[in-house]
Image 1 (cartoon, rainbow, N blue to C red):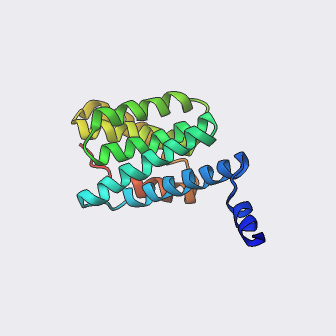
Image 2: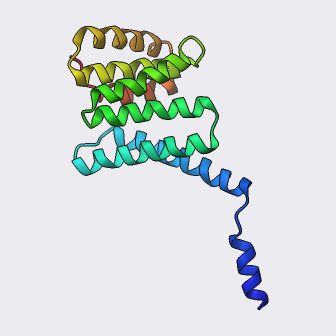
Image 3: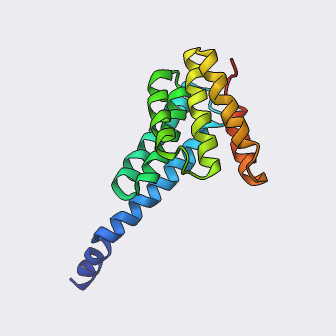
Length: 161
């Protein structure tokens, strides 16, 4: 009988433990989506990016601050662009860009502009692509070495039009 009560105690969840689990899943799925986005080639891999990105967004909405949610919009935009949904990718990328514009860290601003460019690339809108690509490159060129490495890993996978 005591073992049963001990086991029941172990699986009881509190608001704090649920929040910790939510944050863990938000971070883990975000990181996995970015990892997959750098070399996805099959439909299954592309679908996995969508699942990871939207799962991250779901969890950040539950446990994160507004900045976390808008950062999740960035990976959702990337996932949608990889899957050919340019217009929807643009919606998410622009939400993130508008939120962080002028107040986000430089690496965040670089990524937001890059995701807007990515969406325009998928949509075949060359002039808009070039505008946001140039902004992303300008900001990205000022990042520290570690940030540039991460930025370039994504940038180098985007088709320039």
